[in-house]
Image (cartoon, helix red, strand yellow):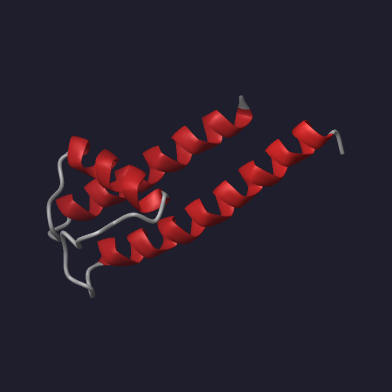
Length: 86
């Protein structure tokens, strides 16, 4: 249950960052677009950049992809411990 809460919280934080930077003059994203982008970036599957490489949102995407990679690794480790009883 805590993993689901952590997942939703991370997606929400990064979506808020995308939306907030959009309000500050970078490429504007609505809440729906920010959430979808956050979910795809979290899992490392952003195929096209909706903003320029030097925008603050591209840095958020990179940080989110790394944190998603680490989160998925922790999830797999936790699941393996439960399955194999270690």
